[in-house]
Image (cartoon, rainbow, N blue to C red):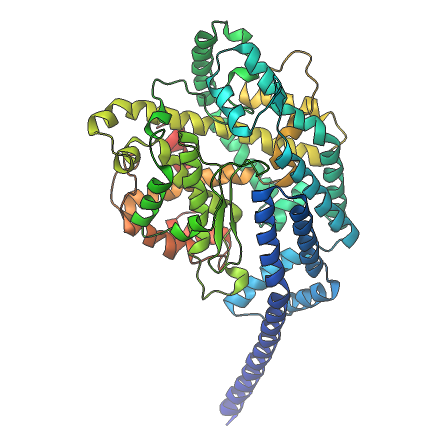
Length: 558
C-alpha cells in the first residue's frame, strides 16, 4: 500500500508539473501570436519600401522605409514585453523545442533594442541618410559622372597610371562626404551598446547574433597564420605581373594599380580572360537554367526583381526576403561579364535559401540559421563562375578548352580566396578597433591594417578617410567577418556534397543538372531555418562542426 501511495504521489506531482508546463507554453504561444501580428506587417512594409527605395533612389521612399524601421524597432523596445520574455525564460517551463528556440531568438531581438527609443530612432535616421548619400554618389572625372560599373571597368582595364589614380581618388571622395556622419553613427551605436551592458557595439553585435567574439577573433588569428605565406606568395606574382603591365618597378606600384577600389577582388594576372565566356552569353538565362537543373527554380524571384542599371538606383547587389513566405527579390545591375555572373549566382543562392524555407515552421524560425550560413550558400554558388567544368556544363566550351584553362581557373579562384581572406582581416580588425575607440586616428588605423594584411603601399602623405568610402562600415556594421565564415562553410558544404551526396571529385564537380544537390540543401540547410542554433545545423548537415580544414584544402594547400 505504501508503494502504491508513493507511486500515486509521484504521478500527481508529475501531472502537476506537466500541467504547469503546458499552461506556461500556451501562454507563450499566445504571446508569440500577438507579437507576430504586430511585427509581420511592419516587417513586410519596411522590406517592400526599402527595396523600392533602392531601385528608384527616391528620397521619400528612403524616408518612408526609415519610418517603418522606427516603428518596427519600437515594437522591440517594449519593456513590458521584454519583462514577460524574461519571465518565460527564467521559468524553465518552455520545454517544446520550437517554442524554446523562438524564446531564445526573441530574447536576443528584444535585448538589442532595450535602449532609449530616441537613440534607436536617431540611429535609423542617421544610417538611412548615409545610405542615401552612397546611393546618389557619382564621382566626376574629367567632367563626366561615373557609375560604379564604369569605375570598375576603368580600374580593371586602363593602363594609364594617371587616369587610374584620378578614378581611384574620385571613388574615395564619398569617404570625405560621409566621414563625420559615420563617426557620429559609431558613437551613437556605442552609446546604445553600453546602455545595454556591453563594452561596445562590436561586441554587442556578435553576441546578439549568437557568436562569441573571442572565438571569432581566435578563428581570424588562425586564418591569418594559415593564409599569410600563401598570400605573400601570390602578392609577389601580382606585383610581378603589374610591374610589367605598367612598365614600372614593383616599388612604384600604388593601390590604384591593383584593378579594384579596395583590393578585395583578384586582379586578372593569369592568361585566361574569364569575361570572354560571358560577354556574348545571356547570363540571366544561364542562371535560370542552372538553378532549374538543381530543382531550385528561380524564375519567380527574377520576375519580381530589378536586374539592370538605371540612374539613381543602388549600384550594388543584394537579395531580400520580403515576407518569409516566398516573396524573395534581388537587386542587380547586370552586365555580361564574369563579375556579374558571379554576382547573380551569389544573390540567387541567397534567394533559394529564403524561398525554400519550411512554410510549416513558425514565422520567427523561417530564416537562415545565421547570416553567414546564407552567405555560405551564396558564396558556394558564386564561385562556380570561374570553375571550368561549370563553364563547360553551362556555357558549352569543349573538354579541350577545359584542360587548357583549368590550371589558370584554379589559380584564379585560389587567388581570389586568399586575397579576400586578407581583405576580411582588414575589415574585421578595423571595425573592432574603431568601436573600441572611435576617437583614434582612423585614417592611420585603416592604412596600418591595409599594409599589414594586404601588403599594399600607403600613398605618401595620404590622410583621407578612405575607410569611410566602404559602405558596409556605415550600413552593414560588424558584418564582414560573416563573409569569411561563410567562405569556410561554403568549402565544407561543397566537399560534403561532392563526396557524400554525388560521390564525385571535388573541384571537378559543378552540380549541373544534379537535383540531388537541391534536395540535400532543402532538407538539411534551407528547411531547418532557425530551428537549431547555427553550430548544431552545420553539424547535422555535414557531420562536423564548422572547420577551416576544407577551406585550407581547397585554397591554401590545394
